[in-house]
Length: 156
Image (cartoon, rainbow, N blue to C red; front, side, top):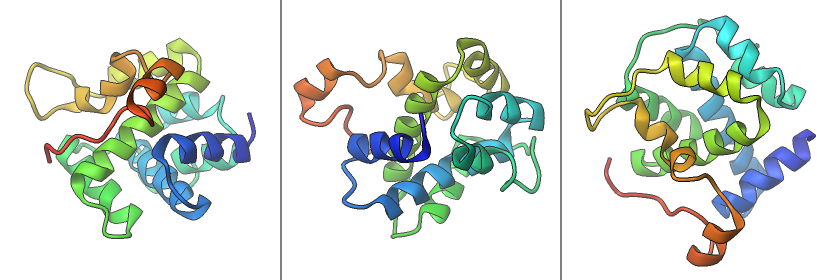
């Protein structure tokens, strides 16, 4: 898969009108994720992605392995996305980007990502990032049922 296919698929899933917003969303999610996980895990996850997308997880990140929670993750994604993206939109966008990444990388690399992010029964945890993945991911059946795949929640 190349950069145009990667961004095109995410643009379709998010129903964005332009590539610029799509690229900002991908960059915001993956750069923030790259800040949160260790450098080696970011490199493993990025290895199967297009070179331009790899950069967001690895080269664009100043400091890997930072410790912050789900709420801080969403705050950073929202700030980076710009366009007055609120927290619920940023959370939804991140879930869609992560679900698509999951479809592009080896299962062991995606599991390594999950292992780096604490999940618990607590309502405010990293498990929220994987809600689309855990519900079976984006698929033709979901898209047909909802007219555009999983819809954003309004919890944040």
